[in-house]
Length: 224
Image (cartoon, rainbow, N blue to C red; front, side, top):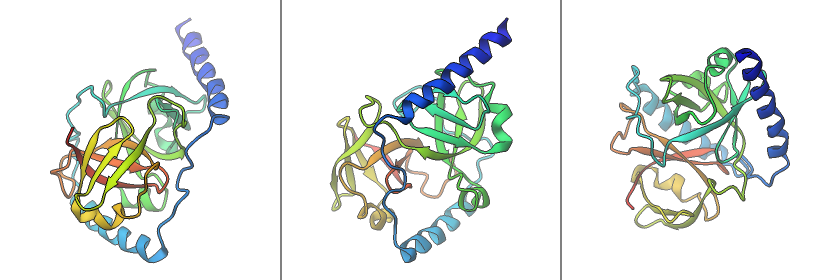
């Protein structure tokens, strides 16, 4: 009976995904960097990845604004949906693990420390389940739904102070070493908040702001 209930829930979630597909979404990666800018950024991130040494030193598992919630997993375990309606494809060898995750599980999003998986497979991020303390590699496939109350957008940018105000009125201080990338961001860009693991280059910053429109991220701290 438990198995039947479990699969019934999975099928329900799968059907819900068709409803989400018809919603007005943020387009993932709709604005691109130039080829030169992209190459320059990749070289910088290569250096940062060399400094990554997670060793399961995940960010503190605090249930706060930066923890996302799992809405559901597809029948095949090939994608999942979080609270803002965004859909994330799951790397094939993590499909079995994700079936142990449950609806409303707290999820942390971090940068993937595997250069090969990130840049050749497109799985730029990892999701950590704070309940099970397990991780999967993911790529953002469909952006958040525009009229979803959990969807965040940039309200204002101050390039002089490297500060961003989001649509929830939160104020963020961005890493000044990423000023060049910040100059490409614009008001109305959609943001998904991730966590910055211990050991990442620039560990002073507790979070990453993932720009859905550009599919790039900047390290940042929330000021207020």
